[in-house]
Length: 147
Image (cartoon, rainbow, N blue to C red; front, side, top):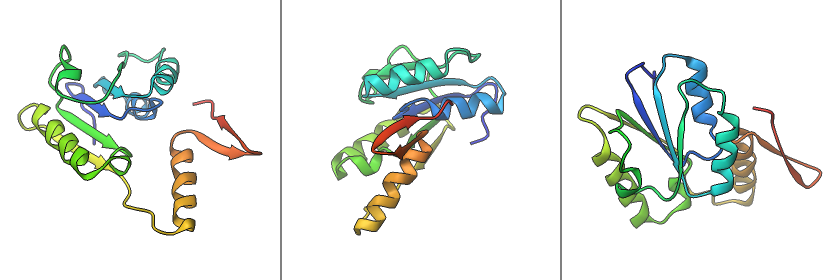
């Protein structure tokens, strides 16, 4: 994605803030805006990123054009690990609204998985997502990494 200082990055499905941390570690001063419907995940994201500068901005809610009113028009939009969780009509809506909310010349980034058809693939998928989200399964309980 190569964030630049003048970038405004909208992260649809921001989760626990790992992308905000990664962008901050790269430096450059890009402005980060994250939206996620999970209040608990958003609280974790705010805690994990509390010392970053510039300070990321997180909102709790489902992404729509109306849900980002008051935020500047993003130059880059990311949708990571969201589309596999929703039906075809919602996929189309999310992609359409993400594309339409972009500043002229903006870029849309998508990272996701297809359907996991076998039991083994579903298990590997779940473990991969837990690693990416900073969690792992240990003695039946989820533990959070210190990121």
